[in-house]
Image 1 (cartoon, rainbow, N blue to C red):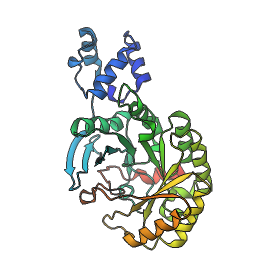
Image 2 (tube, rainbow, N blue to C red; image 1 turned 60 degrees about the horizontal axis):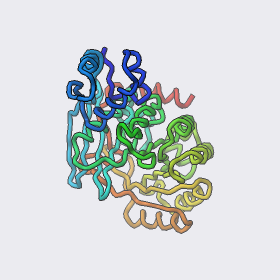
Image 3 (cartoon, one colour; image 1 turned 120 degrees about the horizontal axis):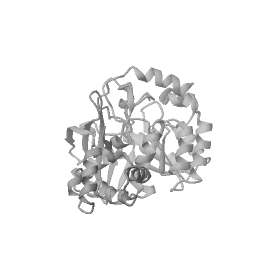
Image 4 (cartoon, rainbow, N blue to C red; image 1 turned 90 degrees about the horizontal axis):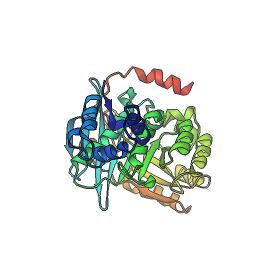
Length: 354
């Protein structure tokens, strides 16, 4: 079976060449061809010897997920449905904005966490994506959009910190100057609060961190984010403070989806202000994006404004995310893809909660 070079970071690619009797500097050359030039064929890698190119063609490949759907929203947001195997497809979303382009990347086929307000979680869970499948989303997007991708957010399908063995090499490629050369401040990993993963990410490849908070107390968060039953708020906030010791930014972003009559009251706003006294943070309020058979409704604009005002009075930075791509189900919490083995969620949830 050929080695997919799309999923090898610098160290792994150097080992690949050394094992085949080649000089390790070949890794830098090939990385530039693959990730900067978007090249999938070895024959066109002109600064490699012909014998090396022939050897690569016989033993390696550059294969990204297959695009099976490509949808453009009225606001310019673009969503791809990407086939990763015979049974599963995931989604990636490109969001163009003034001065930057952001790619939202998936890390799993489905999601095990089953957060109450998220369409992705309702699809069940099949498997982790490989490093090549994760990086392949960025590789494809670079070839398909005219704008430069300046930011990557791992906020697509899945919980990235439950797939760190594949996510970490992908992050290293995103940061590598011979690949995508992104700043640590411009690569964001989002987590529902997998504390061991937060600690490992801090130690091995700290990038910007976003935590899906969604509730300011354990009782409500237990309902909205079931993972909270294993990692309650007190432990989560302590992990956030540990992460800040090595984080490229001096704050944690807390994501907070606004659910009418559930978590959007004045009392919850005051509780969020109190959390900000314990962790250096900013809040990103996300208007709920509805999906079929959801039990929730989006908080109204005036309620969101009032909620933000209460938190801001405590001296905390609060932003309200502008909904993008909701007409093509590409907005936050709407990504669903096509997940085959939905029975695995219950097994995986038991492992997390054990």
